Image (cartoon, rainbow, N blue to C red; front, side):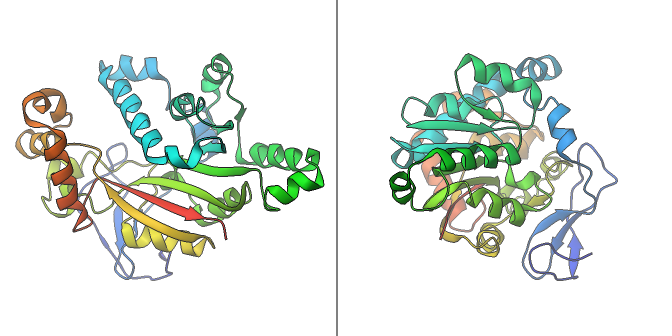
Length: 307
């Protein structure tokens, strides 16, 4: 077995287990640090019919509406992060789920487009009048149609490339069997110098690499997460796809209370229990800064740019 990013055949088994399929091994490349699974069992049909974005189903399975509330908070944070880049711009969200980010971004953007395989989300997009492509191929066809209809002057203004100024992909790239190939296709949707904002889980999350929390290592790995990236491998991914890498930023989505709850009780959602008296903006910023200094936040955000 070769590493997808660097081709090395040297790897070791990481501690932990894949929560929905313990027979799958978690491997880490000794050369570049890419974390990957020993088996890949997902495909387009899995995502189209999987019900991964059914909010009512999430509630029925877990009894926790706070998971849905978390998604609103995360999408609000994402909007604030990219707001300067999307005001008055044409944007496309790849793996857009039930449209949570696009619903918040639409009032600020010139136009929005979602790309989502899962069929049951379509009603949400119709409700909010947001165009939806059910596949990357359909999105490419839409982009090509827009280009064909444009005047020669408009083509010149768009930089001669695709039709979108900004493409976002939040917690999607880790699901892709061929992320380099998909990133190259996504780049064709962008105008020249168009930007991609990529958000992924960090393979070097402190709960895995510093605190070495057994409970977390048996919870966080999941069979649809085929690859997990660290700051180095995420940068390398963008470069291998032929994109300029503007930055890779370490971000801590979950506060210190969540970390402490994992360490003391082996369970998530500590912020729901202890956050009221423990978490504050100053503490969160300090905790994030400390983890970022060693590349061990729970999340990475990269900005790639079409050359």
